[in-house]
Length: 342
Image (tube, rainbow, N blue to C red):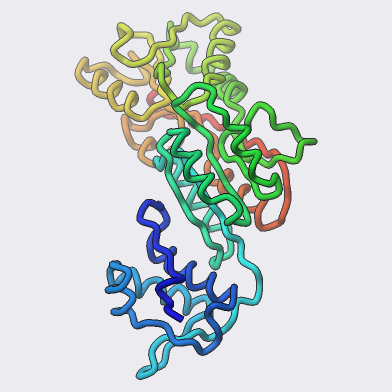
């Protein structure tokens, strides 16, 4: 048997190549294509034939040795040491983008699963057609499909696509689709966008009272759910705040007494540049609130106030659904982190 015929390295996948190599070998052991005591190519042979670095090949072999599947003997080389005793989970993980907070979800998800779990990770850049292509080409290949469904397109036919996946294999992350009800058998670990922003602003209400106007910067063409706008408007109207919703920082005249809420990182950067250029004082002249907690926001402007879901909990809960073989709709709590920018 030519082992290179059973090894798959997908250059378009966001999964590290060493992980893809290790997973291919594990799959071959699992199916019996590779058996105990079968010899594997040397690191140099793997590197040359697959056009990957020696470090990548060596890292894959080290991972397999750690799992006890692979061993090596000087002069003999690498060989299969043990057969896989249980069927592994094989997961297609499909994210709309890889940002700082999405990486937190990814890291928590991976860390909570068995180390021999195969995870094939793809990014579709908020493009529904690319999302559809990746998914349709990989139906019936995985034990689980973990998907984030945020698109720039308006109302794409998501349901008819994901309903091609058996419900016991499907987990939606970050966003629950409107048709999902507990009795229907879907699983999701998600944010409640309208309720979350309303509750987060309530938690900051005592500080917001020092300002005159709340401004939500929400790009016109955005993958963020428009429920955020609904929750923001409801809070402002109930709490009697003057408010505005603008597509970018250039669409509003910034005035002392404004609080800006940004959902996109690019808008946060532009806002900070304007504040510095005009020598305004955050937390006094201007208030700043940013969506999504990341470590860097604890430092910028002596600390930026954030409203954010618990991304670590999101990753762990999704992994637990897989490990325990459960189906559930799990909302993740939203938190307000009050800092000097407000």
